[in-house]
Structures are given as structure tokens and as C-alpha cells.
Length: 332
Image (cartoon, rainbow, N blue to C red; front, top):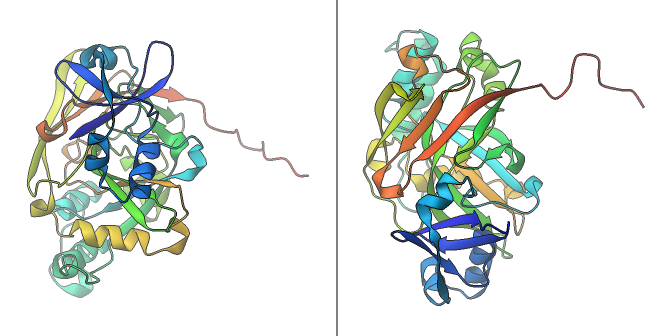
């Protein structure tokens, strides 16, 4: 089952099931968050709850995409109650990509391993502990709140001080916190985590800064079990031509951490269990155009596609002015 949030021509929010060629609109539902909370209250799975709702034939899906009316597949009316985060060095090959990006050799002895290789080794050794067990902690980072999420099809704003415009094709887990303070996973979506890899390469301690960029995910929410092996394509188009293209792999067969382990190490923090909040968590990637020496620029278009997730996630780039200029902080 694949769900979508979108606006109709009157600007009203709606939720629907993906159909061919038209969306099947769920009557009386304006957000996937509200849909999830009602499923939790009914003690039902999201898919089963959706099947109980009345539907009506909606607009042609392709027209909604082309008109830019598709919303992220999960959000919150108050962006401050949506936390966007992620984990890195989670996929087989991700450490090699990271080391290549930092132009450092992967040493073999434990005492000479780079931090990236050491973190990756911990994941390989203990990232899949088995159901109900605690495994190795992954790398974790904060991206922002819901205000940094760009709808599918829209341009990703980049601050004028940015040194890189780097895509990161990833899967995202989408969650709502129930009134019982438990996290509930609605499903998964395609994501472009988007980072500043030039800044990160200067010094690994700049990783936190490099992640404070806009991102996008969607357009569709895939409900239900995630296939163990997923193979998609990440592209950059410039002037209508493909500038760079590469396969990316995901799913647990291609990861050194289990999804259960990544979820545990995020939601083990009590401050992330506030009832009603939304969490968007990027699960990582091993595929970056930056590692191949590609530098994207304003006007380029990113495209992340994976058949199991329906329509591709497409975003452009535009530069915007930084939040403040030096000296603009005022004393009270």
C-alpha cells in the first residue's frame, strides 16, 4: 500500500491511495499524521485502518505531481513538533565512500583506523544483534525540524555560505508518537538527505554543521514490510541531460545495522517520545556523487528513484540568503 498527501486545486489537504491513473482519496482525512493517530486509537494497523475508510475517485496522480501539489508524505501542523534526524555508516560500502570522500586510506589495525572505519567496524560486528537485543550504536545526527523539509518537486534552498550542494539518496523511516509515548512506524519513503560534503571534508567535527541543510522525502509513503534488498538509481540532470547516474542499494541485506537497531538507538531517548510528535529518520547511504568528483550547481535536478516506492523524488537547487549577517545578534 502506498499513500500520498497532496493539496487539491482549492488548497485543501487530502490523503489518498496511489492508483493508476487516479488517486483514491480517503474521505474526511486531511493528514497521514491524523490517520496514524486514529489507527493507534483503534488499535489497528495503518493498512487495515485505511481499508475501513470510504474513498472517492480523485485527480490524476501525474497531474498532481506536475502541478507541484504533492506534500511530504508525513508532516505536522506545527513544524517544531517534527524532528528530522539520521544515521550514517549504516550501509555496506558506506565507510569506503566516507573514507574516499575524506581522501584517507582505510587502515587495517584497530589503533590506526579512521573514526569512520572504526564506527563502521562496530556496526559490522554488532549492528545486527537479533530481535529484542541491543546492538552497536550507529553514528547519529540532527538535521532540523519540519521547517527544513521541502515538498517533492520543489527546489532545495541552499544558504549562500554553503560550499557544496550534495545529494544523499536514502530511505527514510516515518514515525508518529502515540499517547502511550510509544513510537509507531507508518512506513518508509524515498529521501534526499542533502548535505555539505566540502565542509565535512575539511574536518570531521564539521559533520554537525554539514547536516544543517534542507532535505526532501517522498512523494509516497510505503506502508508495510520493507523488502530486504532494494536497488534504486540516483541521478543528477543538468540542462535536461544526465550529468551523473549511479545505482544505490538499501534494505537490510545491504546494511551493517538492522532497522530495529537503528530505531532503538534513536527512540531510546525519552525526549523523543512526546505524544503527537512526528519523526523523520534518514537511514543512510553508500552512494554520493561527491565521492565521484561531481559538483552540483544551482539549476541542476536531483532524481532518486526506486520501483518499490513508485514515483521518483525530484528536487532542484536554489541559493538563498543566510539567516543573519555578522553582527546582527542584538543584546537586550
